[in-house]
Image (tube, rainbow, N blue to C red; front, side):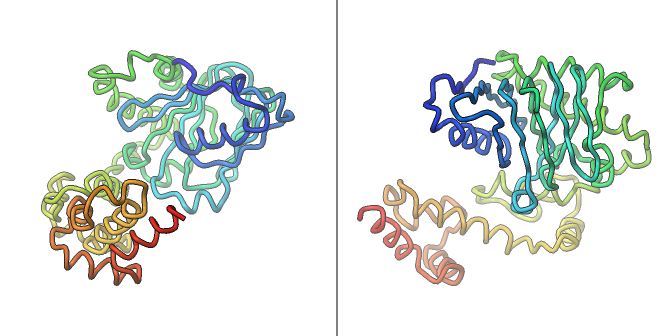
Length: 322
């Protein structure tokens, strides 16, 4: 994987901010505490994606990464990060546990819970981010295996270390048919590692139902613009009945129609206020997010935000022009 960020070409005064923006946009929001002075900070980051899997290969001077309670609480797309230690060592702290990672080992940590990752000797590491719903593992199992060193004492983990360390740096695996072919096997391999480490087959038997609500909301986010997004289609995509769909969402405090409408309105608001907000009509923007009736769109938008879509757009573009 070729570096897409190298602080050697960035003025020292800008390095911390540039690194922070790259990490937040590509992987996860964390507070970053660089140990050296600004002029001595050295970071080389390569970024890639394989389907829904995000990858960051990093070499850097000493640093501490902290996922605070506030950042964890604001997480709208829960993820599990697999951290692969290449050389040196690092310390991962989460869920009341602290583990020391040595070369050939890796650990997982969740985005929905605060954690700390310390690289006192510098960074030579692979970060691989999986959507939490894709793993389809119960909450309890994930809590029990976070911040646990995985490697030498688990033959499945030893196999996975070789696989994931290569996946992180192989450009040809990140593109086209190769990428499409390895997404599911990569997810299944990590699932195999975590369930074998937990050594509790009964917990691994019911993962799909335990994470069904998460997987449904992930599906909804991915299909918000689809005009035929309906309860029947959502239920069919997850192999359940419409009645079961509503029951699952109800247990999570979700009203399907309200959830979809709220997020579609938020996307319309963002687009109307954005730099391209005047390139299309208000009605066209509403239609693109599933509001086929312009009058209805204007009404529900004003109910939600106190302004009509047109007034919202005019207000923000007036500010930008002045």
